[in-house]
Figure 1: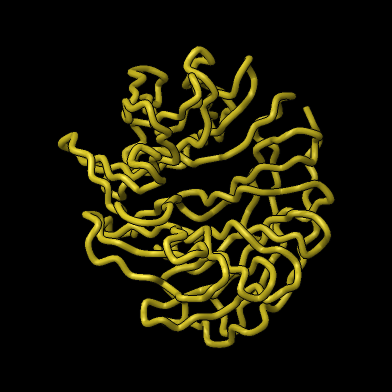
Figure 2: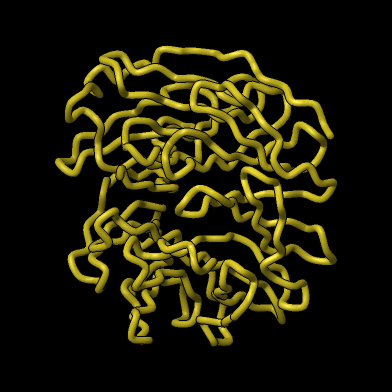
Length: 333
């Protein structure tokens, strides 16, 4: 067993965000923008108020809100390598904590459903491993401990298991691991092709993922006990990056089936709706907490912007009209 290393905790006061105070100071969306010449984390209220909260010449990316909506995890290389940081908004002066603090790359933060821990991918052992850590940087734990690369952690809704992608076989597959006991379950077989990007259903019964096989990608679903594998997209085009609606009745994904990348919604009755048909390419759908809207990235205006649409494709709005590129949008719970 590899030894556990609990890192020192670095605390930095966030500059330029004195208005993010309780109550009501935390905005509705976070995303990455290159408008300052490098990737920065921005907050935007639905009123349109915008603020750069990372404000550093280094690269900042992969923002993820905590379940309570008062903390934001993201990745930054401001110390010379990728680390996981947590910005906390419980105090009038928000602070930034480096919770992974290691010379190797630490990426892909994912909050536990109760907000008590973060899972992330670390390369400190020479290959990708899933680690756990408290939001203050304490209680670091190597969860997967396998010589194959383990990446893309995704918590089950009850917090008991983490699904992840691993190349433990001849190809990459989806696995899940019991957080307490360490028991690992293979959810897919390499015969299905390279599988990646797990996403749990809100009930924890199913796991969505993407499979690459025969020069195309498909949206797949498997029960959490590794049974009842299904191909949900059933199309010769590329279909990928699926995500559940909050109540579990719909699935959004991106597809190349209509001569360009678009966002599709698969409804509970089996009907399929293209909600972004038109010019430009769209990708990375993210459901709003109430399940009524979907945020996504689009280059329809000549650069990559964040847009929001109703789940039926109506009411499309541009979040911000900067000529820079915006990506990685995440909704505040």
